Amino acid sequence: MAYEQAHPWPELPLAAWRSTRDTLHMWTQIVGKTVLSSSARQNHWWHTALRVSSRGLAAPPLTFERQALDLELDLVEHVLTFRTGDGRSMAMPLVPRTVRAFYQEYMAVLEALGVEAHLWTVPVEVPDPIPFEQDDTHRDYDPAWANRFWQVLRACDAALKDLAGSFVGKQSPVHFFWGSFDLTATRFSGRRASPRPGADRVTREAYSHEVISFGFWPGGATPTGISVDEPVLYAYAAPEPPGFAEARLGSPGARYDARLGEFLLPYDAVRSARDPAGAARAFFESAYEAGASLGAWDRAALERVAVSASAPGPLAAGEPAH
Image (cartoon, rainbow, N blue to C red; front, top):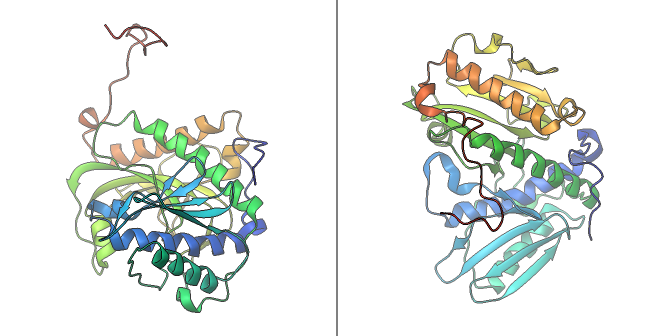
């Protein structure tokens, strides 16, 4: 099943695909928990994340005791593909069905491929989680909306990767966190952050150092029941420096959401801009500048000096390197 891309930043109203979104969220958690069960630990849980691929969302290469494995949620052909190091491949169709049925087939495929994965089956970062093997609630899947979601992820992924070139300090890859169901990139000041009172081990590790993060979230509900009923670009600083919430970012439609402690910019405001990628980058850059300035980051050391117009450009095709 191919797709037709009518707009590089297509509409994605949450109400129109919420039930598909919720089902796909659970499916990505199943794949993500497989990653968690097999990957060597990295700082800030980077090892657990998925990546936007040329066809959907992909896991990093996985290594189990007896098998190597690639996993990809293909949102063009609408299959979950399994490829092993010994040359075998299998696929599961992405069609309307319960999470319970999806999970049962998923584990059966892993067993057939000789992959011994042990998953904790309770979803994370969602209100009222239902264990995968008991979930007959989430069952809807509309391929057209799932494909459109991937198109939005592609556009935001490209904008975030373009932004990364201006920062030379420690920063994360652009990655998709299956718990919170968002695409994100994070910059670090290089300084440790004060421990958060009462934080769980996931949060302690995620925010062990000062960060400014930005990304895309399709909307929904947080584990504490805070709802955002539209897709948004977001930006936040942790710990938040004094004055950050009052910063003027200059992006039309941007607002500070005190419930979340984040700046939000409606995705519709971005996609309707004359230059959506430029509007996204301007929002991310202005939030970073506010957080880094108010937080007294060493910006001179962390940011790349702009290249002058007279500096040599990239090599043209066929041009010798020297």
